[in-house]
Amino acid sequence: GKAPFQAVLTNGFVVDVDGKKMSKSRGKPPALMELVEKYGADVVRLWVASEDAKEDVPFSTEIFGRVGDSYRLIRNSLRILLGNLSGFDPKKDAVQERETLDQYILAKMAELVKTVREAYESYNFPAVYHALNRFCSVELSAFYVDACKDRIYCDSEGSPKRRSAQTTMFEILDGLVKLVAPVLAFTAEEAWQSMPGGKSTSVHLEKFPEAVMPAQWSDSEAARWEKLLAARGKVNEALEEQRKLKK
Image 1 (tube, rainbow, N blue to C red):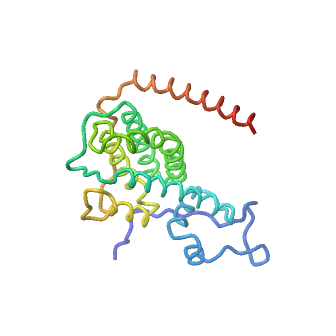
Image 2 (spheres, one colour):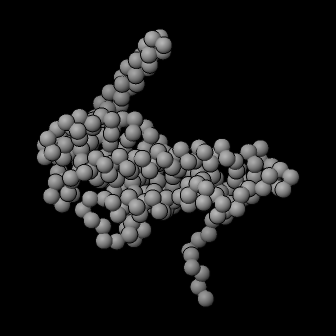
């Protein structure tokens, strides 16, 4: 017979947060299906991916709580992108010219694709976990999606600026769903089938995205954005200090 796989990755023992073996007296970890029923299969898969397979795997309800937060962050990012694509048909409404903010996030997406692909190829699943988590929390939720609100909610439906944002969000969503699919198998498929334009096949039959920088992006533009974001960080710090003083 032939093995139904090309490679196998195994991890160490499941231990408590102190690195000690779990037993009846110290508290055995729940059975796998108990975890699936309580947290969901994708959260369990994300927990496994978040831990270094070369080491023993720590288990606690607190760890699962943190992984659950990360899962909800990624899922909410997909949900927000889908919501912002309401009324968008990629075959008719996609545009080539992009606003500079859209070019910035596409450049960050290309960096993410490169990082995640390399991590998958080397079985470095924790690197996948952290890269996806950071992109969704820092680049998407805390910055890009927030900065696009005026274009998405205030501009006319077919305005060039709004279409630029929607085209960009569609491309990010398309790539992001494919990147999370090996770990968040069910969530990725759900998002994939909900994407505008119609999907005739499963996301698990798709090829991984390529790390391609936007055509209009340049080193000088990247340097300019670094300065802008550094200034933005200083302003946010000052605003936060003022908010604390008012309390």
